[in-house]
Image (cartoon, rainbow, N blue to C red; front, side, top):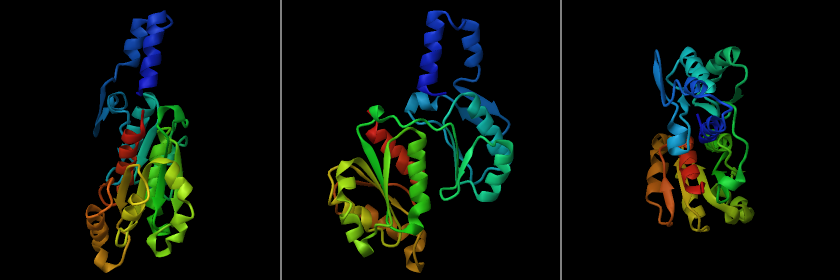
Length: 250
């Protein structure tokens, strides 16, 4: 349940168009709801501004369906991350109203409409290479599902720096920038040296042997000499999106 739904419900009780009994029935599973394999935090959106999101990697299709159905009863958006295509196919047979974004491995239902008035400006998601796009798309789609205005600039890594410099208008217009990069993880430092807004660096597990599954990029980003660069965990596009939401929200 998000703040808007709760606000509307309270207004209806105040105006008399909704009885106290009806409101109590609506709030029966608020703030939490116990399922056989989960305890859902329906109050999270009201409390933090970001709804609970289903982490699908280690859940069965049946568990995801049960959780998603309970969330839908409380209103959207409903987001599931790290869902592989086979699992998504099984879930969509039960919940055809969901959209599956294959590149990001995400299931999404009832995304919020873009609401620029709620934000200081736009967030820009940059991916260093095409191979980093799944993580970048996880960040971008999480934000757009929350109604966050987003631009994207993909395949703009340091091996061809002109690709980034030719699009500086996007950098200068952004209020927050998410930079997703693997290999040596240099791109966030470059971006951080060009802009005054916060930069959220996301290391990916993309790279050859000595990248150590993203550890090289992570350490490179943590050791950035550019001011204003913060770092989230390896491949954590969702976490970067949540940070951008917290920074950019009015």
